[in-house]
Length: 547
Ligand SMILES: *[C@@H]1O[C@H](CO)[C@@H](O)[C@H](O)[C@H]1NC(C)=O
Ligand SMILES: *[C@@H]1O[C@H](CO)[C@@H](O)[C@H](O)[C@H]1NC(C)=O
Ligand SMILES: *[C@@H]1O[C@H](CO)[C@@H](O)[C@H](O)[C@H]1NC(C)=O
Ligand SMILES: *[C@@H]1O[C@H](CO)[C@@H](O)[C@H](O)[C@H]1NC(C)=O
Image (cartoon, rainbow, N blue to C red; front, side, top):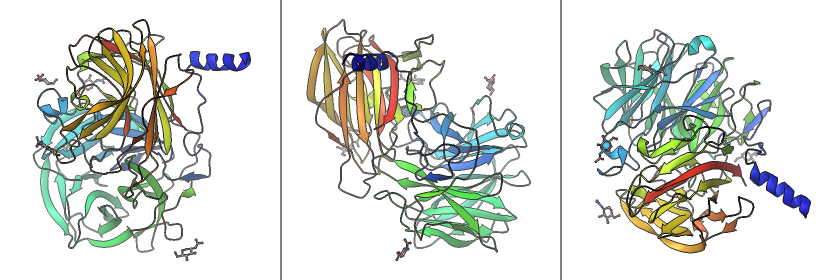
């Protein structure tokens, strides 16, 4: 008994002592990998290689910073290392400060590429009718096996037309092109600096069905444009000239995927390894978890058409490892104690944050202070909700909060964030801080305005003014249930004994499988005022583990 207690106490007292698990489905020296490669919501992927490093850009809608950049040495283990769009400079509603909200607007399918000639990364995406461009120096990435020592993104004047679902190509002769469009696919040639349009021309008109999500490659003298028929097929167009004419072949159509109730693998793009093996990286509609990446090899026919390597006609659950390397990236699981001078790239705010209302404490203990940024009774209207992708198929996210500086009327806690949301947290009224579980927080699927501000579904204990810390845990099952009536569930729990024991609070929460919000469920931490600003909480740690 005593022995057990000591073990528990030691674990509780040192949250850094993690069992760093076999989180990724595989270790770097594994000979095979499993799909999905990273069970997290990273949709609309654009994958390319610089030296030994594979980069992956994905879309983030109104979350800020936007367009995360992930890196990998083997196409299977991925770590976010930057965001191409550090601040959503698309209009005031992205600040969530009085001119409406931007939920489900913002960064949709966009593109990221490296140009060796000027050692620059280019990110482009159509937002609010214009094509926004952010660039970062590569710090010699091409000469340094693809490594970037210091990302530094700056925005450039947008191009005044929308390159819908765009894909950047840096041609062999260094000319830059962007392919884009819906059903009528166009190519734009860019100026020498890659920042302006020189000309644009329709290159392929499809009929009878929609195509979009373009990516463009130049391989062995051919231009290839990959397009999707959402969300059930992937096609490839090919031509000797960038301007066409293009002919089309099918890569896949309505094939079975590696996961059930997760749709057909589609969109994304292809990438080659240093030893010239090629892979197609696509995504699955894996709601309620969002859209998650899957990988499969491709081979080339003798006359230069790519073909998907299937497992007897289906997208394989497992394939040989693309690259054998001893280089590794950080695990997507584990504990963040907010010890750095900036937030890690795992984190994104619900909109652009009010930067005056949060700070990292630094020092040996770390911690993130969230002051109340808004007076509101609508969590969706409150700035500075900080979100984190959920690891599938089922994981827990545990926030350790110091609540001792909350003020009368403040609401803070851990939220399961999406357009149908729920939270566990503290409602502070007068001198009383009550642990509550709240559900019924909803946005309208028609216009993303708030339709439900939440109902207290269960009350836990009052925690006295002297109580420093409460631990909130959300355990979410995001096993895909897309296109089914099955509701995956989430449970909410708290600990008031330093994370030793947890008590569940409230009913199980059924998650929405709808695709219309696009982004999957996330863990989040929030702190807003209903009466007056001035209160704060400190987030001491966040830990995510598979359960
Ligand atoms: C909203 O935020 C932006 C950017 O921080 C700021 O320029 C603007 O003044 C703010 N508007 C209001 C109404 O607070
Ligand atoms: C980032 O780039 C800007 C110019 O765009 C420059 O002024 C600044 O010094 C750079 N910062 C770092 C840390 O390299
Ligand atoms: C391959 O697929 C066919 C058609 O779906 C099926 O009849 C056959 O049993 C499958 N073979 C294997 C080895 O799974
Ligand atoms: C948004 O849609 C809801 C119905 O889902 C409706 O009640 C509300 O009036 C709409 N709001 C706006 C601003 O259009």
